[in-house]
Image 1: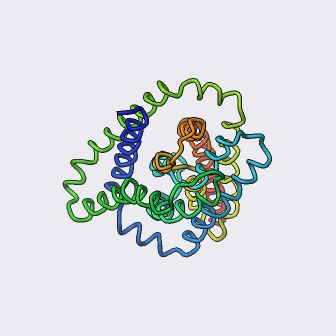
Image 2: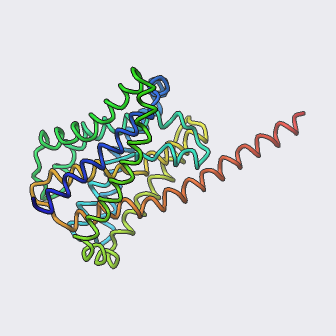
Length: 293
């Protein structure tokens, strides 16, 4: 068994464990309720698969990225909403109900749209849209759906196995990082001297602040949650897509690997910033109420 085969197995385990955990935690009633907001659904779709990829193309034109790093950034732009979004939203003191809509919407959107957009957007990628869609359905959508079904029809079982899936997700993530560091450590060190990290940070910051400020008609806590969902990335979907590429350039993989620790640090900082905005709004409302009294 080659190192690429082992990588593929570990990447699939990472994806299944994380998306399965998401499904087991998902409240279907809250999801359906949140999806009834046309404004939230429209903003999520437009930012995730129109403006986000367009921003990635613009960044590539501005920053002197190598061709593999540019391909990695484009793939990065097509996988919105990290499985840890609920954690980020709680840290931001934002509206947790928004994640109930964004997470399944992002997973389904990624499964449907990534196979259509990636071959057109990323130069040199000859991956079959059907083959990529099949991989994403099996490893991204199916674990989520199975988790939701268990939560709806066997909630006690879901409660029992959720901690197991969470531990499995942590172990799979660590195994993936250790495995890749062992094989691609030199490529990762070379990326530190490139614009790869700057490109990802710029993408996250622009999508976060612009989507927050252009969250028309949404409350402040909803805009914070929307911004975190839009700027965060699903590493599992990126790994699965990369594994489906006929030719797997290590430098594209490096860009995907950087998409885990680098944006995470930025997401946590953004969550604290949005929490301060929430506190500011609440304080202003309290002062206004006291002045009326």
